[in-house]
Length: 397
Image 1 (cartoon, one colour):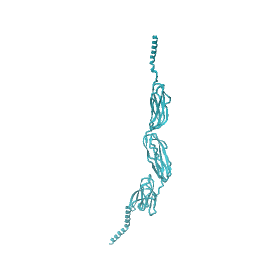
Image 2 (cartoon, helix red, strand yellow; image 1 turned 180 degrees about the horizontal axis):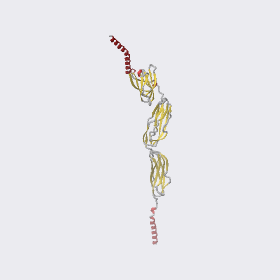
Image 3 (tube, rainbow, N blue to C red; image 1 turned 135 degrees about the horizontal axis):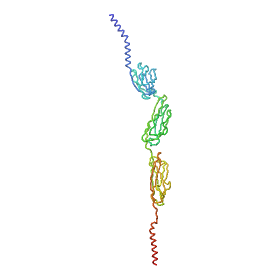
Image 4 (cartoon, rainbow, N blue to C red; image 1 turned 90 degrees about the vertical axis):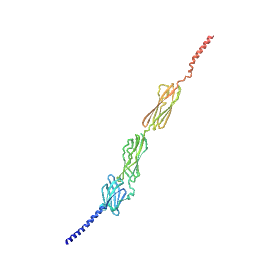
C-alpha cells in the first residue's frame, strides 16, 4: 500500500513539472503555424500596410547592382528603420518574423521605379495593403529630358544635302547632369559632311534646351531609317537615366538630271546672195538645272557657198532651270547654190556631271538666176536674119 502511494505521488510530481514545458512547445508550434509569406509589387513613392507596420519604397538606388532604399516604421511606436536592401537577401526588421516583426526580401527589380518584394510575418497582420506616401504627393525633384530628331526634308534626291536636327529639352524640375548623346554608327547611305557625331551641353537646367545639327549627303537610293537618338544623363544622386527620340525615315530618290533639247527652225531655201534667219531654242526637259551651257555651231561643208558669221550660232548660259527655255537667232548668207549642213553641239553640267547633246540641220541655197539667159538662142537667129536681109537688098539692086 505504501509503495502504491509513493508511485502515485511521483507521477503527480512529474506531470506538474512537464506541463509548462509542453505548454511552451505547443505555443511555439502555434507560432510557427501562424507565420505567412506574401509577395507584392509597388513603385517608388508607394507604401504597403502590414498590420501596424508600414513599408515604403523611397528609391531604386541601382537596377544593375540590385539595390533599393526602403523606410519601415510602426504605427503607435517609435520604431523606424531606413535600409538599403540588396536583392535576394533577407532583412529582419523589429526582430524579424520570429519575434513578431517583419522579414523582407527584394525578389525582383523591374526598372528604376518598380520592384517586387516578399514579406514574412504573423498571419494576424492580414494582407498587405498598398497606399500612396506623403512624399509621393510632393513632385519629385528629378530631371527629365525630351529628345527629338528631325530632317529638313523627308524626300531627297541622291546627291542632295540633308540636315538632321537634334533637340534635347529638360522638362523636369532638377538639373540634368553629365548629358551625352549616344554615338550611332554612320549610315552607309550617306556621306557625312559636318557636325557628326552630334554634341550638346553636358548640363541642362530645368526648362533649358540645346540643339545639335549635322549635315550629310545622300549617296544611294531607297528608303532609309535614321535610328533613334538617345540621351544619357544623371540626377543629383547619380542615378542614370536614358531618353530616346523616335526614328526618322527618309526617302532617297534618283539623282536630279537636266535634259537639254535643241530645236532649230531653219530658213526656207535662200536665194543666191540672199540672207536667211536661223532660230535656235534651247529647252531643259529634265528635273535638274543645267549649268554652264555652251552652244557651238559649225558648218560641216568646206568652201564659201554659205557664209556663217564666226560665232553667230555660239551662245553661253550660266543656268537653265528645269522647264526653262533660252532662244536666239543667227543669220546666214547664200553665196553659191547647194545644200549645206550645220552641226550644233551643246555641252553642259548637271550635278557635277558633264553632259552633251548634238543636232544637225540643212540650209539650202538656190542657184543664181540669169534673167536674160533665155534670150541667147534668139541672137544667132536675129544675126542670120539681118545678114539675109542685107544680102537680099544687095542682089535686088
